[in-house]
Image (cartoon, rainbow, N blue to C red; front, side):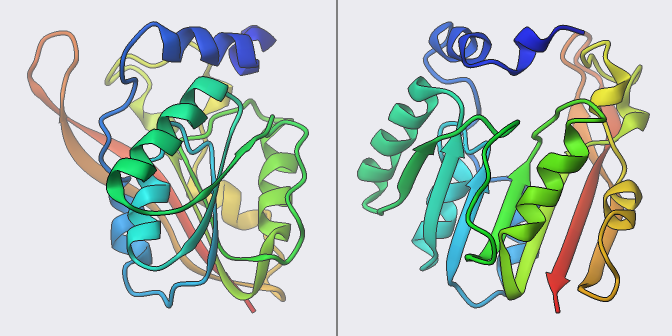
Length: 206
């Protein structure tokens, strides 16, 4: 593993290499787990080209999207304008960035993968940004996917929801979901259907 995977240059090269890096569809776990919440202030960490942030903004959330890539943020802003919604876009290196504590009614991070040792303080900072009564939603690739579909050969990037839940103070948090959720996808190499799992943590600050 190289630290270059987590730099602005790395992600700028990835975004500039293609007209669109992601599908433009919101994260399915965001849709399922947030649809019933009362809109408020939301922080989307690792927002990429803005699909999740735009989905939230369309539903009345006041959204801040944060990402390390200026190109991603430019595309997100363009997509928001085309969708007729407003959001705030922040260039942030999540390995060091500290969002304002207690500010957001929802903090979400979809498939933000950094190694163990860096992941724990990152997610702790995101948890601290959740307001009382607010929700923390984190989704990522489950370790069981390694070998099922192509993933970076860096096993320490992946995590379980139980690992994330164990880091939350039970006196301060109600864990509402800590799942390995299955979904069926087409294998990117041979095209056949395979079942993979996403680690999904949803917790409410008491």
